[in-house]
Length: 428
Ligand SMILES: Cc1cc2nc3c(=O)[nH]c(=O)nc-3n(C[C@H](O)[C@H](O)[C@H](O)COP(=O)(O)OP(=O)(O)OC[C@H]3O[C@@H](n4cnc5c(N)ncnc54)[C@H](O)[C@@H]3O)c2cc1C
Image (cartoon, rainbow, N blue to C red; front, side, top):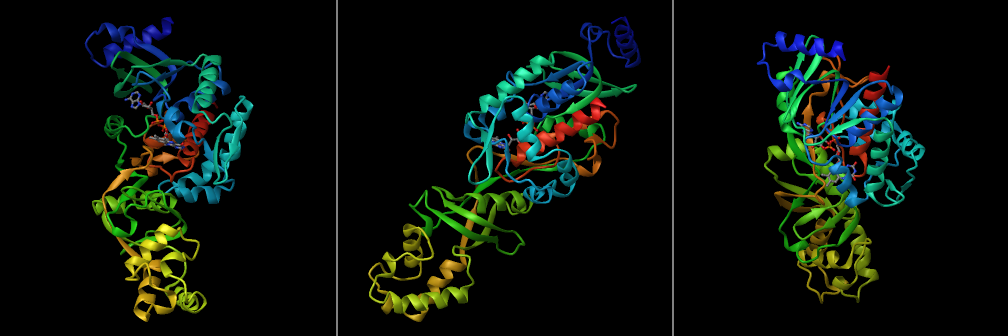
């Protein structure tokens, strides 16, 4: 204690700061973690478990911690995704794909499932690969984190927003809204927080410009008007005049289009689409067949379904309401029979089915699950330890880094993996 007091006094003199009452009573820790979110708690618990002697503090600016975990996955917390090969898993990260391959060999999906299981939280895999707690409640994850943090006596201070970060004589000095703190090692898990990125710039780090990722497309078009909730199960979409391409289910919404085919484009195209101010054209292939093949099939229908109305005989497993919209857009009336459609109408229908162009004008948030592309430049991080290449004893994990993923549990997996490796490096 006396030693810490001396250290503090040396700082006071050395920094040439005013003899501030708060500074004299500055608190000293081995490790301070800034940010009480997913990555912050996971790092703290793993550090404490691996080395219980270390004095640990989480500083959180909000009045509550783990607020995003609480609302995540619609209140169910999509913890991770059932993808067990690092090579496949990384393909879900538009930013971070190359850098995460090594880390995922250290800690990934299976480890996450086991980590929670060992602490009494059973997870389950849903049909689409998303993994949730069996309880279907994010509170289970929060309770688990609180219990573990309590067990290892991790100190947590809410309402402590970090305003300044300084490095003096191999110690980190943090000025917060409610006092000054000092530590030997510093872990930054502040998510997408612009103020912290500004402080990190002052420390010599470069920040890739934050832009939104994971959003839905606003589209006003007769072909999708008044049919919200309709899903085309397996489409291909590309952004015209770019290399951006995706596949999967497409959901028609009140404002435009959503679901994985669109969300993947929004994540992989986050930078490109921002440059275009979210105004661009997409081409949708609703049936994932080339135009010529589609035309041949339609010609067969013309014979096979001759007496039936095109409007009422939805094909290619397309939902009836979408099929009807696409036939009307091909100048085929609701009464026209297959036998009576001419070549031009057949081609128009094949066109609508395989290369329908839609104008996107703006974006909307996806179930409030917004994620930010951007953050600490990945070239400045050693991915064996998640330590800064500019400063010893400065570590990062989670969304503060320029890493983000498509929806499905991948963003949390990034937080768990980074935090676990930080803990392993620090506790050594
Ligand atoms: C509504 C919603 C639902 C989501 N659902 C899912 C899902 O189901 N599955 C999934 O994988 N991903 C989901 N995500 C994304 C996921 O929540 C994030 O990727 C993840 O929380 C990132 O973790 P993190 O610890 O890096 O940051 P955060 O969880 O954002 O935590 C950062 C913490 O740092 C604190 N902080 C910031 N600045 C300071 C400061 N100056 N001083 C002190 N503290 C500070 C913040 O208050 C916050 O508590 C969802 C996101 C949203 C918004």
